[in-house]
Structure formats: C-alpha cells, structure tokens
Image 1 (cartoon, rainbow, N blue to C red):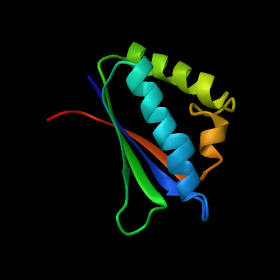
Image 2 (cartoon, helix red, strand yellow):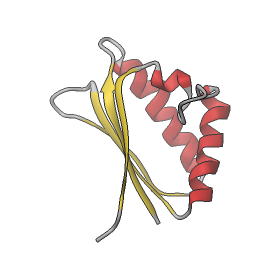
Image 3 (cartoon, helix red, strand yellow):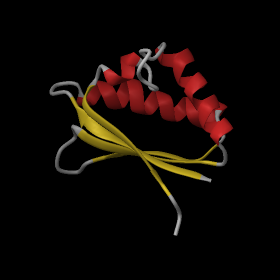
Image 4 (cartoon, rainbow, N blue to C red):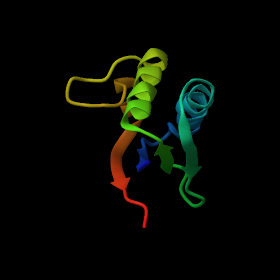
Length: 102
C-alpha cells in the first residue's frame, strides 16, 4: 500500500475555482476510473488557501494509472514535474510526501 499526502497553498483569489475545477473534478474522475483505496481532499478551516489531499493506493501501477487520468482531464505535466501544469498553475506551494504505515 502507498500512502501519500499532497498539500499546498492556493494562489490568492483562486481557492473557489481550485476546489470546483480541480479538487471536485479530480475526485469524481478518480472515483470513477482509478483504484484509489482513499482519495480525499481537505480544506483548512481557517484559511481556504491551504489544503491537503490524502491518497492511498494499492500499488505503484495504480498510482501511475491515476496520473494518466489526470493528464487526460487536465493536460500534460511540464518535463520536470509529475502533476499537470494546469493544476500547478493554481498553486503558490505544493508538496508530496510518502508515508509508511506503523
């Protein structure tokens, strides 16, 4: 099982659009097309520009398949990035961390 958290800070004035066009759409597509054990977006209660996405995948292959779903929906990634450029364009900061279950 792969456990990861994608977190970041949305650019000023773009939070509502991010949650509608990125978070909601990616969650719907992931539930319909991918094999995520968990895929859940979280918005900070005090600052809607801060978020995290909790993801759990059964295999690396399932995660890679998910990226293909994202590319179909949101377009390609830049050569040095993994996420589609159109997603990263909303963000001032972005971090992905992998975790081990204990």
